[in-house]
Image 1 (cartoon, chains in turn green, yellow):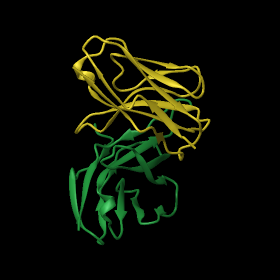
Image 2 (cartoon, chains in turn cyan, brown):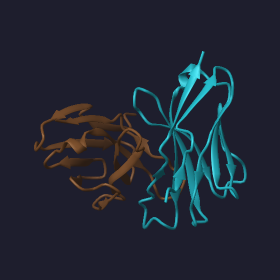
Image 3 (cartoon, each protein chain N blue to C red):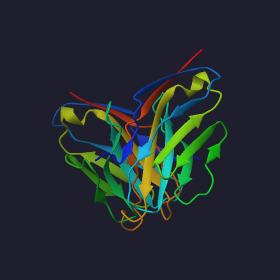
Length: 119
Length: 114
């Protein structure tokens, strides 16, 4: 079963508008972390934002915020005031605590959402 | 800081040839990872190394071997390349003692097997 689901293969947004990229996850581990990465057309993977399962507040990093709804097991990425440079693939990932032995702390990845920002 | 350095950036192989992808990180991270990325399939973990001296299989280890040469370096070897191994390969590292630290990625290697 998919542990990380990104239901939107592609999204469009107008420049300067806000956009929400969806991510739902499945885990029985009470302790986990959620990550968002950006992959522009140049190919590099860029870390954007992190949310811990016990964090009381939603994470924010500049124009990025994470809408964390623990009961619904969702961790949506919100990008405010979209810019042309935000056009990229966006990946949601999860790290579980109990289901990883030792220090390996593997990441479980979604399939990504392609975002296009229109001028 | 250089971060995670992968070499080569591009490679074309013929079926049956062997090659080693090199990866080095200068952040003193314990954990290192090799992924492959194929269209529509996201990132799939090939092998990982939780710490120097240990390696473990990920989701798709068949056809690959790894060596954690020291704390800095983690190499991926294709002994007999197959067209199905045409992909973009990423090396990553992280300090993974807690949940929070994210993985740092190299720039990737585009491999074509003809």
